[in-house]
Figure (spheres, rainbow, N blue to C red):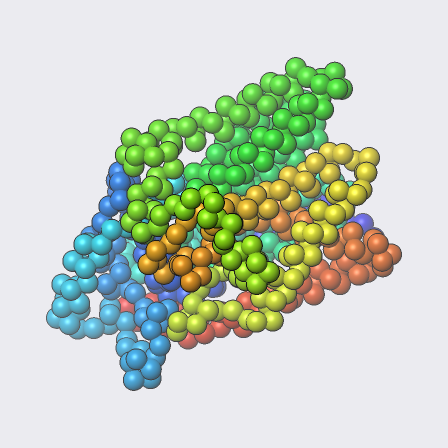
Length: 498
């Protein structure tokens, strides 16, 4: 039975609300400051809020240091046993004289430390800094203001669900399972980056918008200049959120160039060339400006050289790359399992233990591998008449794979010295949040694999059963994994203790 278009839209709006509610609840449950460098990211938000972007690797700002001293929880990094079995009350509840002693110690400590994330791209921090200033205008201060900044992710998560729906509908206008399946998966995606102040929550929205534009450009011979302009800007924005997203413009440009080549065979070369040129300019100008800023203030195009030096990494000769354990069966399994699991559920720890479920992590690793391999095999073997859809699916697949390959390249090309992560003992970049930009393409592939498997088995009911089972599994597993945070006396729900 096919649902009315109006009904489908209302279902997707409901899924947007589910995503917004999920992110609000979990972002409120987790106290500040988590193990995924949240101190460093908050410091950058503060600096951008004051219109003082870093011009090099800089120390932490005094305002950020004040937040760290007053509102930090020990629950991420210290076990309760180290406090005699029970954590102390938050610092903001201490008498003024005791609090002042802590401030006198903690603030100079943070002000003397360098923020290794100073060279990160500016877009997320500029947006969050502006949002922080809005919070100040409505009278928010202290802990409520920090949560106000974190709650920016509520709107981002809701928008991501709608963009996922729009991109899927643009590619598969007659397949309501995919149109509902992709936003359903995005609505319950348990990635903890959305529960933190960091740029990794914005990446999937920016590239999701870009992917929507690509679906239009790759399916229509004449799209004018507006679509390639905003698509190019969205691709550029993706890179201005996270440096690790730099492979994505290459994939997008290659896809449009291929479509331009095919257009020449159809006799429509001129409009295709115009589309390609406009797109490339729209991508290149913002990224070029960012490169120029980095070169002037940090000494290299991507502002990563000073960070690498600060962390103590050194580049290995190419002939040493091939001795990396990632090229062994055990190493590749370890890399894939940890990377994909953290792409699904994030990287938070609690009481020094990873917030994870062994069963859920196994599902993430196995199902993701099956989806990537199966869709790749289908695209290689199937000679579909709908070549535009095949090209879009290839873009989706290569977008995800290119980010994985980039992390492999980073893993094998550095000696990490005394750095705790990555380290010489565990020389892998397994931060799945660095794959977040490809969320919309990945979940399109995931839903597509379910759809194709159900068609192959000729059981139409199976696709909805598998989708609902996956959504239920994701919902239950993240409730189970994240449950300990709700009892924290340092979180948003206990703010009335202020």
